[in-house]
Image (cartoon, rainbow, N blue to C red):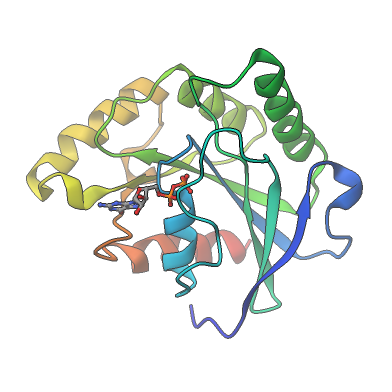
Amino acid sequence: MKITSAELQTIAVNKEKYPKDNLFEIAFAGKSNVGKSSLINTLVNRKALARTSSRPGKTQTINFYNINKEFRFVDLPGYGYARVSKKEQKKWADMIEEYLHYRKNLIEVIHVIDIRHEPGEHDKSMYEWIKYYGFNGIVVATKADKISRGQWEKHKNIIQNKLGVENKKLIVPFSAQKRTNKDEVWKVIEEILEV
Ligand code: GDP
């Protein structure tokens, strides 16, 4: 994919603020610090379009990035901070649920998982949500540079079993640091956009 433009279009906390045009949207969901921002930045060749190194307590928002004026990447707020209150967790869940439930523009949710770690309960719930809403359940397994290539299959198996991923081909190892498999992730996204 040739990137001609990539801009933050809107930041929203509820559906009234979502962009009102008909562009297709591909959303990214994942635990905080998993490498979601780095993935988005790498895909669009920008250093700091999406914020990296999010910290606990920062405002949780849904960020809409307009790509090539043709489609959008949507950065969903990260989950899983041990220290956030029940009230904050509920706010997060309501925000995501509203987006998944109402957003007609949404054509796929890509689930971002750290390749090194067995998915936790929050990851499982997120994946169940993604499947419940009828999406394919594509997983980008980040930080793949942190383990050797020979370990990838073992870690993919763990992710597949824990989340209940139907087909291992849906799990794509990726490294923002080394840009490994950037083209593979784009291939998956291009296939989705052609629908
Ligand atoms: P987010 O909270 O999910 O948006 O995560 P970030 O993109 O901010 O990344 C969190 C931390 O992980 C940062 O320190 C990144 O530099 C680091 N990181 C992200 N992706 C990779 C990767 O592919 N490889 C390595 N080694 N570090 C990464």
